[in-house]
View 1 (cartoon, rainbow, N blue to C red):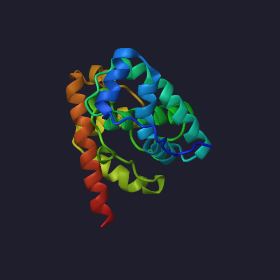
View 2: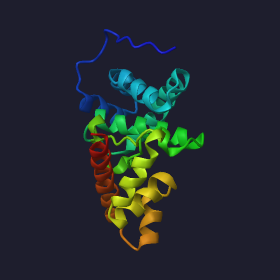
View 3: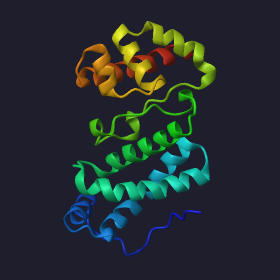
Length: 193
């Protein structure tokens, strides 16, 4: 079982300073201190998405391993937001590996696009019981948004694959998905009220 207790030896260094020390020296103690600051957040994200305490604990450990590789090479503006997205994407990929239905979890975001994301950037697909409302709202989306969202979330295609299929650039696909998510959320909220 994971313990969420902070050691009293925490550095007075900021997130940015700890990350810079780690990127420069490769010393795990810097990254360990930084990760410990956000361990509760990472576990919460994993538990929310995976809905299983043991799987969430395993994910927390795997995310740290992934973090040791990615934090050395990826440009990070806001560590907390970047780590949040890293954790969320890791868990979503785990769900995909388990072949769960896409309605069971939050929709994924592209990590490279949301380095400074926060939990407010989340988009949660509705509960499977809301399938009828979701279908109605999907049908109300502009064609390119609907097509992009269906391919990305329901058929697990990449931005690049969708862009090739539509003859658009990847940036446009990202925009269609982002705007489509917003429009879906608004439509679902309106139908609930």
